[in-house]
Length: 247
Image 1 (cartoon, rainbow, N blue to C red):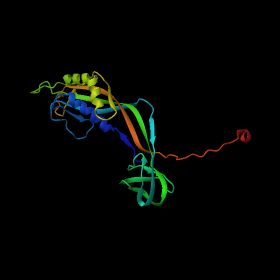
Image 2 (cartoon, rainbow, N blue to C red; image 1 turned 180 degrees about the vertical axis):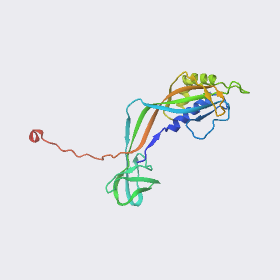
Image 3 (tube, one colour; image 1 turned 120 degrees about the vertical axis):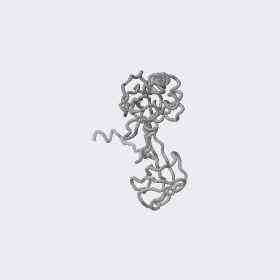
Image 4 (cartoon, rainbow, N blue to C red; image 1 turned 90 degrees about the vertical axis):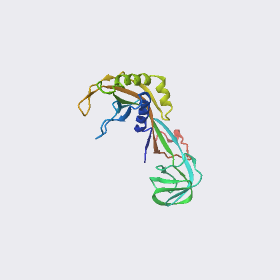
């Protein structure tokens, strides 16, 4: 079972970086923290993003969709007819009369797909490869460090405090809401604190101005690829309770 998380943490982080690059002065790079053996950017001013924490906002939302098709299997090749419902995709589990347990689609397209394990299933049966999705609504929090050029630098601008003011102002405005709405992922800004100035000493043991912020965003992440088996029919029978109970 190959589960896929969308948007991924990397996509959420990339969206935040894109916003920061837009509102910070030209030439100010924004990098990911927690990297080994990587020097800080050569430019005097730069930003660093640190993933801090995640908080669930609600219980999971569930959805299911079936995928039905006439099929047969010869060895590891599954031949399919017209697919009704969810299109087939690699990683999905196949169910059907005579199909071996835990049969997984590995690759393919159109009418020919590769599956595992190897088996033989004669034509005439109806297969299914339904899937379920689980959506979690959560709040992700990132620390944003804004490093300004040292006060005694030949060109002391941009200033860390000014960069902080630009980020805080625009993140708590419709500007940020519009930006994140256009990235194509269910990620939206929630809040950002006013920040604090933190002493920072670089590799040359020289102090740099640095402001630290906490930016909160809501991210609705979808976990997909969970197999879901559906019943095509149900058989009911009636029981005369006056006769059957008490036993």
